[in-house]
Picture 1 (cartoon, rainbow, N blue to C red):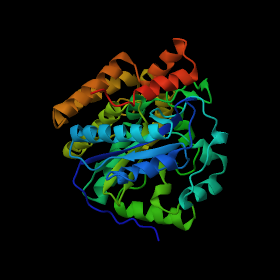
Picture 2: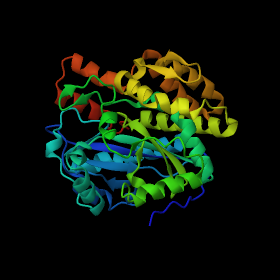
Picture 3: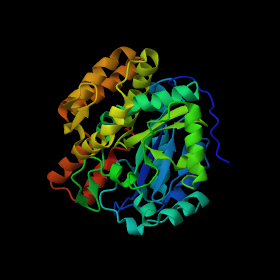
Picture 4: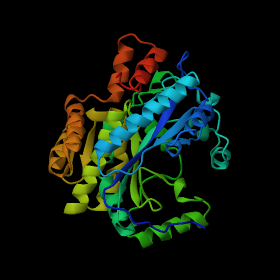
Length: 376
């Protein structure tokens, strides 16, 4: 039975999940050590924050529920330090980034859980290719109808969010030419994409989900790999478009952006361009952001013109400043604005290392260094 009952939550509360690479200390290739690392972590009081993922060379790091980004960052840095210690005991290092630079998907091992075994049986080789790494941000919504409205409203900003997080230029040891190659892997699944245009209320969503379940397309709402989706059991809207950033502070800045944007949208309820126009250009804009990152041009449905995404991001961040709840949130927006101004994302940093003569293992080493806790 599909459970679509919406559990109310406080508007614009914040939480997030990070899918993390586990790399071998010596080879810097992905290491199938999630089980051993999780066994160590599950001896602690924070065990609930660490979870298995689809393959054994990755795990998921989950925050608690927060009112703002300052406490979220403090918690994530603490959990990240615990993960570094537990991974080190197993000869591994945690690492950010949306893809591993040179891993061979054919070598990946599916995690031994019924859901993941079924996933592998159903999707074949795509399951092992799904060893890509994303950040999911949850923002609280009081009711299902509000969650549907916010899901549509946030969808206008998919290219902005993707470009700011893009951290996966490499696949199989080669520069893909994309700022976010991860987004192409996710797009291969039949239940990827976006909330359908015709879903206007929670009742509409329940009917659509029930139809998908009757057709055997989904078994639960977890099978919807939309870029943004409602999460009724948490009472949230979940933004799933992000690559996993290379460091925790940047991931928190992205989460703070989602919270501030949601606060603006829910408080002001600004008039939105027609959803037909939005979803007409949705895939094009998403592709542009994935391909070119902060240097992309997108079609702006408000003006009907092609615009520079980097400038559109700067304009958005300026517009959101009055809605940032505290100094930490304002600092997050300012740090994102610096990236947009310089057109310099995580994908740019990885390519710089390569241009400076580092081979793929050395680039992974530099990326993993960003996950090390700061020295006391």
